[in-house]
Length: 104
Image (cartoon, rainbow, N blue to C red; front, side):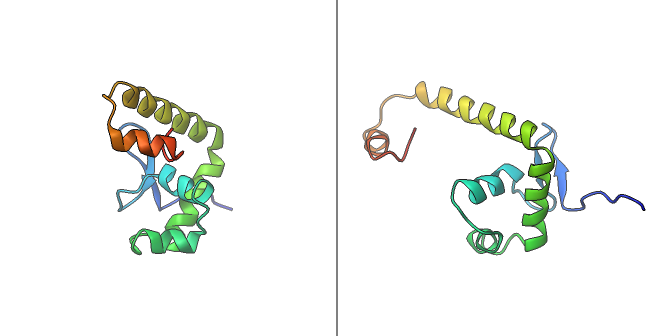
């Protein structure tokens, strides 16, 4: 038996996995699945059919094959965004969203 490589996933210059031929990062699909609760079919629709089911399933497969690394990277990126947001001046709209629980 010969193993085959995943033809749908590649790494960018920073080592982040993305869906080949698109600008979608694997982490976006993971967030859509586990945070937003979308099925693979819904992800395709939510992204204006720019992704097909094979690409979505490949992204999820990549995630599960590399779960610890992906979770660590996504947490680090979230922390970086939080640190940047903390440096911004208060904006009334942002404060309202935070009070509504829509921002961290």
